[in-house]
Length: 144
Image (cartoon, rainbow, N blue to C red; front, side, top):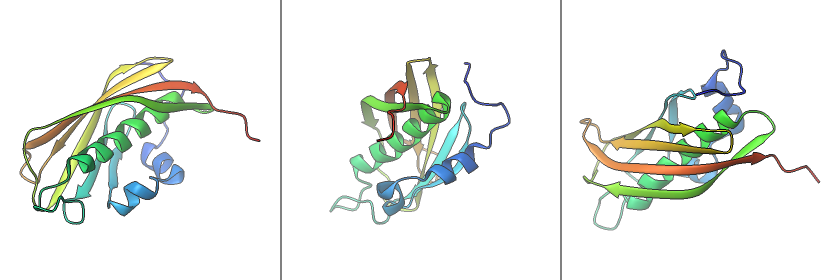
């Protein structure tokens, strides 16, 4: 799985410099590992729940899209941009407290398209949701 990036790039520093975006920050996401082959982030359940106290299904998807899109952009390299074109999620267990952890791994890393799978688990290591995201890679638009 080739990339145009130098092999010694610090993915966490790259992600910190780029920023998570306002939504990810509001949801309390924290990246803990960030390479082209594996990205990991955590998110608290508290503050991201449905009215009945379960982690909102959309919160799982936001975590998955944040991880998958950032991973695709790291792979895309300088001067290129990855944009989401498809995402789906299957929720298999509710999370009601603590934190959830998303682990993002590539399924396909191409020159024009990437596919990532994100497994989201609760504090006990039980899988709660599986997300798959497809990103299209294109040249960065020219600045106006």
